[in-house]
Amino acid sequence: MATAQPVARKKSSSQIPLTYVVALVPVAIALNIVGGQINTALHLPTFLDMIGTGVVAIVLGPWWGALVGALTNLIGSFISGPINLPFAVCNIIGALVWGYGVRWGWGKKYWSFFLLNMLVAFFVSLAAVPIYVFLFGGATGHFADMMTAAFLAMGQNLIVSVFSSNILVSLADKILSGFVALAIIEALPASMTQGIELPKSTGLSRVLWIAGGIVLGLAIALIVTALQAG
Amino acid sequence: MRGAVLPISMVPGNSVVHKIAPLPKLLWAVGVLIISFSTRNPAILGAMIVLGLFLASISNIWSSFLKVMGILFPIMVIAIFLQSIAPAFPQPWTPIAQLGPFTIYQEGIYSGLTLFERTFSMTIFAMVFIMTTHPSDLFVSLEKIGMPYVINFILTVTLQLIPILQREFATVLSAQKSRGMKGTGFGAVLPSMVPVFVGAIERVQQMSISLESRAFGSTGKKTSYRNVVMGVKDYVIMVVGLLASAVTLYWILVDKSLDWSRTMHFSPTLSVILVITAALIFVTFIVISVSKIIKT
Image (cartoon, rainbow over all chains, first blue to last red):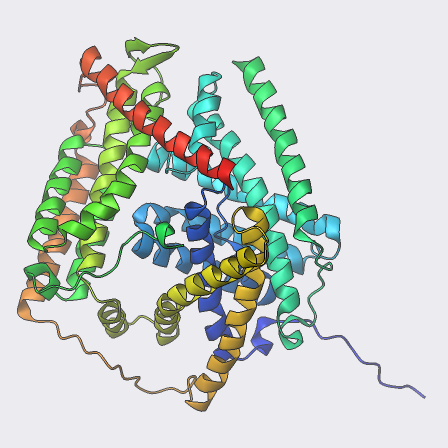
């Protein structure tokens, strides 16, 4: 006798009530903005303005994440000036890579989630460099400007210098943001996260050490390359 | 936390600019933003800066305006330093002076100055708009021209949540410090994000139930506590802004002689003074950043 087998339903954001989505999105945007403000206040060499984007992109889907990204920079431009506005593109791209990456299975294992965050950093940097160089002349007052000047002094051109400094900051930022988002998602109600396969969140200190190691290794590689090319 | 937040918020007042409805002001700010990103002509950008400063002065927002500019100005100046030694311009570049190991290029000075003007002009207009407009009035106006209610609601709730999250972060960081844990740096900031977000999620659940009970998703006209009425004066300002932006944009796109990058010349002395000043500001910025990082 054939028995009906339970079929695992694919998770979609449409299963979550609109009122919940409408209430979650502002929290994510506010977290992005406040995260960025704390980062500026403490002069941390990161951005910390995409944690909310990551949470929403993974839980609700890439396009809700993109909305969070776009609105973060729109509202951010009202709070900290219009320099933020063009960087909405980076926030949107980050949301799409996180959202689709997790849905395509890149978030199942610890190492693949780590790689996904590095991929986010790479695509976000690719989008950020033209904005930095052609709209703001390579500087927006971030800690990375110091590294840009250092790479310029080594004889690199502006585009390569901005990319080199931005990818270093972005790697550290997106790895940390991705794992903080993971810890937040674990703390969300089970009804919101069922069907999403993610690795178990580990202590953030371990992530900090690994991210620091990767950034340091890449920094050394970039400096050696710059010195050889210069 | 307080030091982190630029003091950009509405400055209550009764000036001519305060009395203009939000939409015409938004249109002017967007127009300036588009023109700023479309041209590198120093005269056009300079004219917008002068107009912006004039609007700031008649709005009586100088005190708050100067505080914000005091923070943003050094950031904008960094572009002059970076551009002067590595212009974001197609080669060949014309060297005009030597400053230690760095060669200063004609195109770099032009590029740095115009990028500085670009950021300055759009920031001034954005500041005037934000400091003379009540956020709720802006959202009511946007809804009237077809902005979806859901987006409008998200924007309003976000603006209300930001100070709440700031307070909660400060509380969590203080609690960590009082228990002998780290109060600054990654070790303190990253773990504090989880309880703050989870606390906010609890608020979200309550808000979600509240929205359901008030039939949030229902169709029909939504009402607002605040009401914005556009007068004839507002429509005139809006049309003038639209025409001025469109004509200037058309002029920029058609008239190739507005590119002065190869024709405008800077004396070596002026260039060196400019770059040294920008470099000093840049170094000060680096020293402050590094000292803060070392402290954390």
